Amino acid sequence: MTDHNDESGWVIERGDSSPGSPTYWSGPDAWSQDHMDAVRFARKQDAERVACRVHGGHHRVCEHLWCGPEAVQCDACGEMVARDDIAKVTAYGIETSACAKCRGVSNP
View 1 (cartoon, helix red, strand yellow):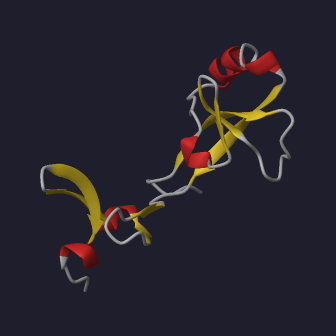
View 2 (view 1 turned 30 degrees about the vertical axis):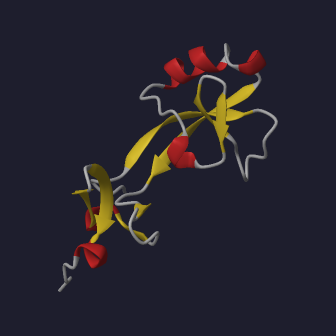
């Protein structure tokens, strides 16, 4: 059973990468080992259509599940925190994200 914050989709994995440590297609001429960078397709057939045209077409199309709320990095302190703990803040005209600790908010 999946949580309401979970997300599933289809991704393209490089055919020459290990299935245990895949490299994901993350856009035109871009690959990443971070699944959060992967281009997500709602339908398998859409991922297959793109996969056959990317870098020679020798890739795997796999269903992937991203469990939420996923951890994200606080721009202010660099710590990994729950996505729900992050808020957008503006400092010196620059928008960034900061966790509750960096914003001075106490969690019960």
